[in-house]
Image (tube, rainbow over all chains, first blue to last red; front, top):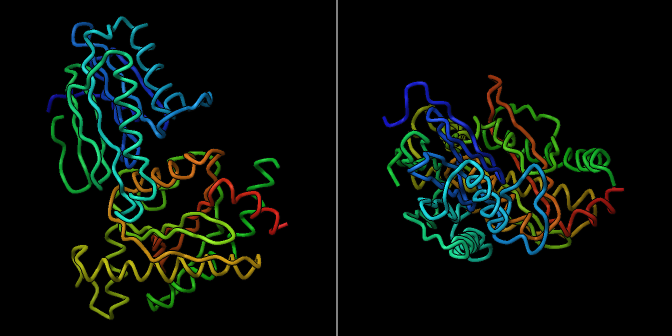
Length: 167
Length: 197
């Protein structure tokens, strides 16, 4: 495996974000349903971060203190800002995005569309920052777990039915 | 209203629903089911999945939406192995006969979700004198938190906070035999509390 033997797995919960430059860290967003995980990594400084976004747009609402990544727009802004403070550059940033599924079934997917709206909002916000994602795994009907390994910048996605594969 | 008061009121509201839902489950499984006092949690907490084995635990279950005087979401979740055991009990098969979530198993779980979920919704309707309609069930088969989180997102996309009631059912061996989650939409919290008062 690419994670160091003494890897420390840090769970990034709903609406949370985490940044790290510790090579033993693996940042993980477990079970993304309609939520989307955004992994950012600067290969030069080996600084990385992961945000676990719940909803598309803040529409001027301030995210709660405990949930800096509740919304796509303010979540991405905060993630990039915190990464920059650790020395990461937006120009070098490798961004990978996974999630946005409709896990409550096809009938409800039409009704809710949260996953789809999250994906749109994230692409838009990244574009606003001049960033095009290097890889995406979005949509579908299955929940995903996304992790980023800080020592290598590699990201992996797994579902309940399939083992981890590199994104 | 404070969170404490809200939790107290909704716990009382959920109690009869959980009892009737548990009775439905007990009847289908043909065995005694213990029903825990319902929990009410405010906010997007991951511990909602603890009873079915944690966030990444693979669960089988069913989702129903509620329409009518109030709107909201109902989910019945089982750890996958428990669900398969339930299917054997429901179908009068030897334990261990069902080994995967095939079409028959999924249809049985859908029926289970329908009966148990509707029992909760009907109790709510009777007790509070509301007109409520549970939707037909959608089968769920995924990581627990992915399902719970999607309900959180649906509720929170309408504004307000997420309030989720849960009831844990336990079989005679003390194992989780189902987790029922009920989340009213934000606009329904106020009317729900008003009629409950």
